[in-house]
Image (tube, rainbow, N blue to C red; front, side, top):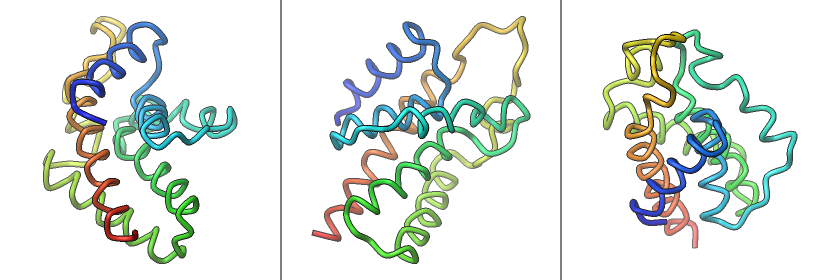
Length: 142
């Protein structure tokens, strides 16, 4: 999926559906690969935006890691290879954005006084990175 399309989908999911970053990540990546996500899987992402506003691991990372497991299974990759891909993705994300932690990526934190969806731009860039990483992964396994 190209960056322009990702930006539009992020904007739509944030402003029309008020979804969090982990859910948005999962939905966009699933669209890219025509994978239907069950409601139970989507429900599991509800609190993954920095561990429910705690500021822990970024939901953009977590959404991609979850999707890596799904896509890995679809492509019949062994568990150890999926785990290795998750490790490599986390390293790539950290290298690109200098952290995996929501509290560092969103330094203003979470407050009702702040406008919603402050991470829209970061989300678009992160999901573009995720999309490229997944394409790279699949190219190696074809």
